[in-house]
Length: 323
Image (cartoon, rainbow, N blue to C red; front, side, top):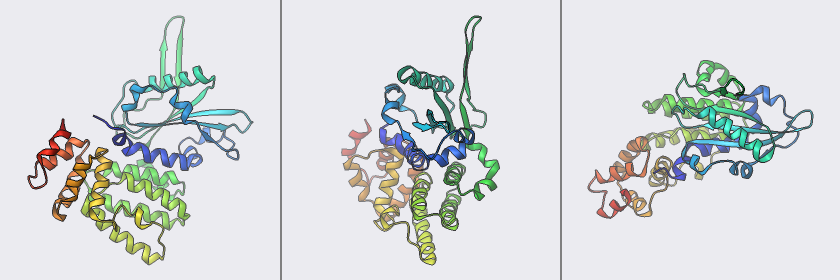
């Protein structure tokens, strides 16, 4: 069963980074709409308003949505519906859902919303951008803005040259997808992307925010994560900078057990206390093996099955959680 924490694996960092850099997100992904907005006036995230028009049945999918109030350069209020599609599978009724949300916003609040979609999947053929129907006396054509992160692969040089925070966000997302089975490469890219923030001379706050996103999506197995932090610790010492605190270093200085447990929680959601205690009894060799295996985990049952496959680590009392 999909848990709320399990769904937060990817949508939470995206929500956080969009909230932290919303003007830059609009300028990066939707420059034409961004040009209509008076950025000198504050924008407002309408989370409560959006919750009123969503259906409980839709909460199991992997996406992040933000409803935002901004101001037109000519003075009037504009509502923007930003939809971030995290789930990497084709959804046949995606365009219909975009129309439905737009219609519900108008129906409940009498506000026409500009609907925009950011597609994070890996299918180059899936490009929804409109919903329509046509009958002899009635027709409808609803179009919405849509960007495909996969398309930025062909503009890598432009990403590297850009100081917009979302250039780094897109690079981290793409390299995470490209290195699913090439984890040494992922480690190199993770270090390279974080080092890039320093090379650009970004303020400490931006480095910390973007580091958090990169770290959250570019998960590494236990051994490579330790190697990465050794390398990064030396890098910060050479630069006489220490922007990333000990607490933020993914448990590198807080112990190897906490690192594996945090990675497990990212992958499978909330871990029962009894199972946590069992993981804490693993030897260094066993933790390294679990750190490698957890990259293929998608649910708590995967962790329980792994423990059950290792007699020294598993007790019968844990079988209740597999039901």
